[in-house]
Length: 336
Figure 1 (cartoon, helix red, strand yellow):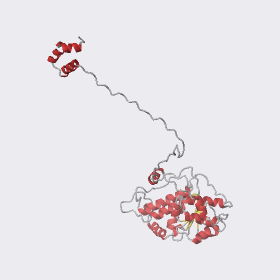
Figure 2 (cartoon, one colour):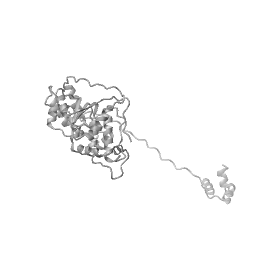
Figure 3 (cartoon, helix red, strand yellow):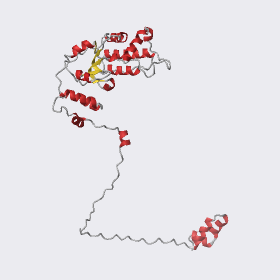
Figure 4 (cartoon, one colour):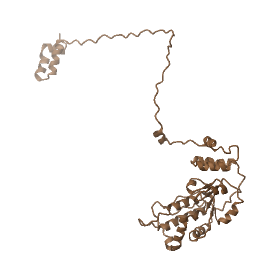
C-alpha cells in the first residue's frame, strides 16, 4: 500500500521520509499492520529541494549571522526557554507543529533522544537481507515500541516546503544516520533547485500572519510566544487585547448546529387593539341569518306504496298482480 502523492514537500525530503518508513518496517520485521504505508509517491513535477546535514558546532557559528524569520521553524524533542531566547518563538515540538508548513525547517538535535541510540545499536546488528524486508510481520511479532517515535520524526521531516536542515552530531549514531544521509545526496534529474530568497527585513505584519495562523489552529501559547518576542509596534505587550480582537469564533457544522442549538420558545405576538380606549366606534349592523324552511316530506300515495311493496318482495305472483291489479295498473300506466 502506498501513500498518495505529496505535492508539498520537495523530492529530497520525501526520499528521506520514505527511508524512515523503511527503517520502521525493518525494526518491526515487516509491516506490522495492513494500514501501514510503504512509501510516499514523489510526483515528477516536484522540485529537488535541499537537505543539509550539519554538526551542532558548525550550526551555532552559522546561526549567529542569520536573522529570525517567520518562514523558518525549529523542531526539537524538548522546547526550553534557552532555545526560544536563541532561535526565536518558532521553536516547536513535533506534536505542536502538526498541520503547519514553513519554507525552511531546522531539525535541532532530534536524534539525540535515548530511543534513537537504541535503534542505532539494533540497526548495526541487522543484516542487509533483513533491512530489505517489506512483508507484513506475523501476528505478535511486529515491534511497535518505536512507532510513535517514527511518527514524530515523519511529521517533523514533512513540515518543510523547500529546505530541511538536520543539526546533529553523528557520534554513536553512524549506523542509523549514515544510510539516511546517503539517501538525501542522490539526484534523480527532477526540477532544478529553487534557491531560498534572501531574508528581507521583516516587520510586524509578517509576524502577525504567523500569529493569526496559530490562533486559527488553537495554539494560543505559541501565538503569545510569537507576539511577545517578535511584535515591536504599538500593540507590543497587548496580546490579550489582540487575541480578543482576532480569534475567530468556532463555526459548528450544520449537523452539530441542529443538535446543539436550543429550540426557541414560541412567543405569541400580541396584536395591537384597533379600537383603543376612548375612541368612538360604530358597531356594524348584525348579520341576520335567513332561515331556510324545513324540507317537506315527499307525498306518497297508496298506489305507490302498494306497487313498491310488490317490487320489493319480488316473485312471479307479485309480478302478475302488478300488471293485473287495477290499482297497480292505474299507478304504473297512469290509467284513471
